Each structure stands twice: as C-alpha cells, then as structure tokens.
Image 1 (tube, rainbow, N blue to C red):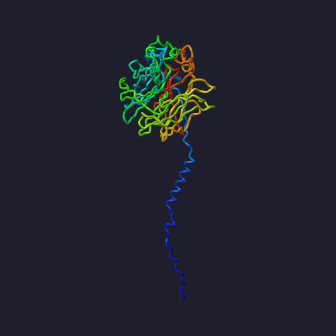
Image 2: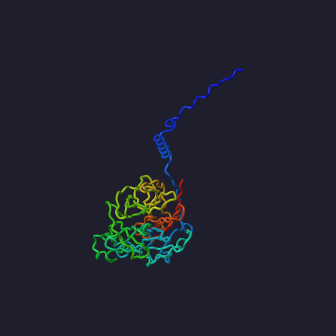
Image 3: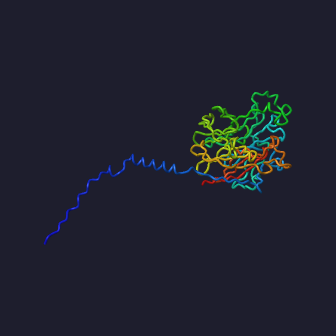
Length: 401
C-alpha cells in the first residue's frame, strides 16, 4: 500500500510589528484630522429667546409712586440691577429721585437704593411687588459726593466677587468736576428742570464702589481704577470670574469690552456690540446687564438701543457670549428682547404723562435693562425701567437648539 504524503504547511514568517502597526505620528495626524473635521462640521450653538411680561395681564410695573405710593418713597424709581447676595437673598439696586420735578439736578440728584426680596422659594411672577421691600428713604446706599456727581449717581450695575465676598457696583457719576459748587448747590441756583442745569450737569463717567456689607451705606468705598482711554465711559457691566481675566462692557453709542486681572486696571478694548444698519438696532447701543451663566457654560446678557425708523423709542437687545472667551459674541438677537408698547412705556395720558421721560422729550421707553435674576435652568427675570420712572420685570427663557 502506498502512503500519501502531504507537504507540511510553510513555517510562519516572522511578524514585523513596526510594519503592521501605524506609527504614532500617523495616529496623531489622523486624530487631528478627525478633530478638525468635526469642528468644521459642528455649527456654533444656536439659541431661541422667549420673553413674557410678568404681573396680571402683563402689568409688569413695580415701585410706582403715583398709582401705588405704598411701594416707594421716591417719585422716580428706575435703572434697576440685580444681585444674589452671599446669603442667597435676591436684591435690587435702584436709581431713585425723591421729587418729581428736577430729577437729576443738584437740587434733586439721583441716589441709589438697595431693596431685598423678603420671601424664599419660587418667585410669584403674578405678584412680584409683594415679594420686595418698600423702596424707602432708609434704603439709600449711595449718594452723590463731589462736583462730578452733583447731579446724581445713576444706572447702577452690581455684582459680587464670591472668592472674596466683595460686592462691586459700577455707576454713572453725573455732574461737572470743573463747575463751581456754590453755583450748582440747590434748585434755585440750578433748576427747576434738567435743561436749566446744563452748566452743572454736563459730564458722565463710570465709577465703582466696593463693599462687604452692601445694605450699609457707610461700607461702600469708592475705588481708584485706571486703564486705557475710555475704560471709564458711561454705563459699565462687569463680569467677575473665578480666575482672571475679568471683563467689563462699557459705553454708549457702541459697546466695547475690556479685560483686567485685578478689577482695577482695564486694558485691551475691543468693539463688542455696535449698531447694525438695516436691523432694529441700526445705530446706538449701550451696555446692559452683567452677564449671567447659561447651563452650557456660555453667557447671556442684554444691551440697550434706540430702535430704527420703522419703530420708535428705547428698547433692549440680547447676545450670547462664549463661556471660554466672553469677548466673543456667539449669537445676537434679530429682534428686540423688549420694546415699548404699553401705556406706561408710551407715557399715555392721563395715567402716565407724569413720568420723567415726558420731561426728556416724550420718547417711548423701555430702558436700563441692567439686571438679570436667575430663576432656575436658563430662565431669568430681566429687570428694566419704563419711561425713567417705574421698574419693570420680564420673564426670559433661553433655549439651546
């Protein structure tokens, strides 16, 4: 019998691992390409913003000296800003004038008050006024000091450095540092209305005060800030971060951003929010509220503007800022956040023709959207004023696509 023989299988060839496995450089190159492709393909985040008026039937007015004098000792209550105190209590700082005629003059200058929310838990949007203290004379925390503030301390924007427990409040000093104080000392020397005080009330700039006990007027200290030209222009909103740099947005006409490592010296200005010809905000823009953090780490904030020729008056817009680089605007609203449509914003007689805006020319007005109060999630109360005389509140919902 014959035996069938088969050839043994060939011996395995030695494996060349270097040839079988991509080089580390090749792997890194592939990874970089994938990241770049994903980055290029991913659009920037997009947000939808919904706004509704608080109060019964949209009557979102607070601190109304004419119709609800029990809520305030001041004739005009406007320019509100919000801060959540370190103990968790919500508070508003409010620009206030004691008397109706001659507001923002040496005889009746603006002061700044602080009022607290007196209840805890969910906010009752239908009855906000009942949740806050009366804006009474004993709530004043800042009064004018010196000739450059003789016509008022205005439009506060408050925030807190939680690392140090220090509150920072930027405000507009209104007066004239070169004026003779005796020539502008009272309403008879200058007044009774603002136009009669042009020689005494003609300069504005941002100043900053700091305190660890914000309810105590004597605790606020004016600080000496420095910076590049324009850092102290009128209207300033500050963002204090856990680690520097910190940022501020300053200006009227257009808004510029600045940065600082110590909150005292401000440099490197960049255009941030400027007018958009053909849009609702074609020209004038003014800094709004200190930015608030969204759930995704980016920031939401507001700005004030004079709306274009198809409409009329003062309104507000909104932007979303990059959480990693807050100087970068990720998105800007194509329509106003809020615009004047109600009688208290239009100075409709007879109920609303007493407001400060009537003395300023009767322009429809929702102004000074200088405060954003977190309600949970990406929902906020936007605090503003109507006709430079009463406070308003709007519920703002931000949704990421």
